[in-house]
Each structure stands twice: as structure tokens, then as C-alpha cells.
Image 1 (cartoon, rainbow, N blue to C red):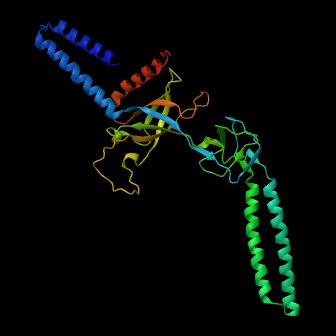
Image 2 (cartoon, rainbow, N blue to C red):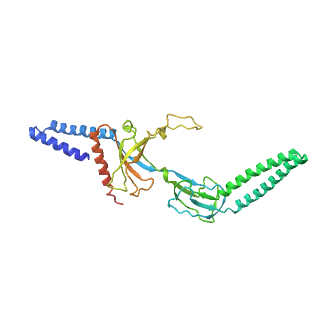
Image 3 (spheres, helix red, strand yellow):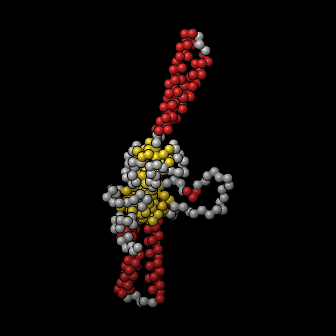
Length: 315
């Protein structure tokens, strides 16, 4: 694009020199080249300030590490990797026999304690039995009810279900292996399909010209020749480079931190379902502000040239 602008400019200067018969000397040549530098520099700086672009852009998503609540042997894994799941679909099952036995034992003890509590209340009412026995059995019943609730929770945890709509990746378990309730030992990774968000990072210089609702365009390296329309949905109000957290050491301003880039959230204006775009794909983004409209065309042309250049890749 810069070459096209310079070609037009030098052609215009040549025409003026020929028409008005301006002598060609060191002052004429210097003026022409100085004008080219000023013109091109002004155009590029205005385009970068009012209509910035970024190559730091991609779709982000939230993954959930699936960890078992109980320790047990895996007996069934009906889930398959990268197959869409609905919330509540079964991911895997743990052998429930030891947990069912514990539930049965506690249920039997609870039934017996409730019967003794009922008999003690009748005895106190009819024959003047000890009130202490009633209090003792009430305490025993409440304790067993709590233990039974925990045991039932463990039994229900033998069947692990999808926490939301999504799919499973990194499935490295097989029937017969042991699942343990350790956060550092997840049995699989679940990708939440409804958490995908597209974020582009921009330098801080043009941040006054990036507003919610601004028009934007996105190109993907994997979809050459196509430009997708988008809009600015939001700007994150904080940068990680300025974060302060509780530490043992005091904060020091002498440490060198990078300037940081502005995270900008974008939403697409068109249906993207016809294209295969994996979650986490890289992209290039340009945002158009409401100022310096005549410079927009240059940014749009540059973005489309970049998109067509994606056809030329040799690996």
C-alpha cells in the first residue's frame, strides 16, 4: 500500500514538473522526497492512531479440570473426546459398591436409633422414663443423619456428569484405573462451549479512539481472502501489569514492567458457523474510529492485502 501511495505521489510530482517546466535540481529533488516522507509519515501515523490494528488477537475459552470427589476404581467411561455434550451428561462412573455399603449400614443404624428414640419418648410419657435417654438418642439420630448425608453424597459422586454444555478433551483414563480426589490429578479436561470470547490487544497510544460500538474487521490466517465484520463489545478496565497483590515483599517501583496492552472484546456481526475456526485461533484485527474517515480506506486495503497474503505460505 505504501508503494502504491508513493507511486501516485511521484507520478503527480513528475506531471507538475513537466506541465509547469520546473527545473530539476537538487532543491527540486529534495523537496519532492521531503514531501513524500512527510505525507507518508502523516498518513501512517494517522492510520495507526485513529484506526489501529493488532496481530495480538485470538478467541479465549474457559476449561474445567474434572476431579473426582471420591477415591475409587473407574468402571465405565461413556464419554468420547471432542464430542459435544449437554449439561448433565455422564462423563464417567466409579465403582459404587463400597459407598452403597456404607449408605446401607448407616441407614440401618439410623432406623434402629429412630426406633429407640421413639420408644424412649413413649417410656418417658407413660412410665416416667429418664429424659436423659431421649436427649442421648436425639443426638445419636442427628449424628447418623449427618453421616448418612455425607455417605449419600459420596455415593452420588460415583457418577460424574458434565458441568455445562461443552466437550471433553485430554481424556487419559480407562476403566480399571483409580480416580482420586486431588486437584493436582484431574481425570480429564472439560471445555465449556458457552465461555468463548474474542479478545484483541492494542497498544495504549490509540486507546482514546477505541470505543464500545466501533466497527472492526477480523481476518484469520486459516481463512485467506475473507474479512469478517465485528464490533467492539467492551474494553477490560484493568491491566495485569498494574496488579498489586499481597506478598511478603513490599512493592518496588524500580522493577521494570512492560507497558501492557489494552484488551478489547469483540463480537462478530455475521454467522461464523460455516467456517471451521478452532477455539483459541489466532487472528488480525483492525478497529475503525469515528474520526479521520478518509484514512479508513487505507487500513481496509492493508487488511485485505494481509488476508490475501495468507494464501502464500510454504512449509
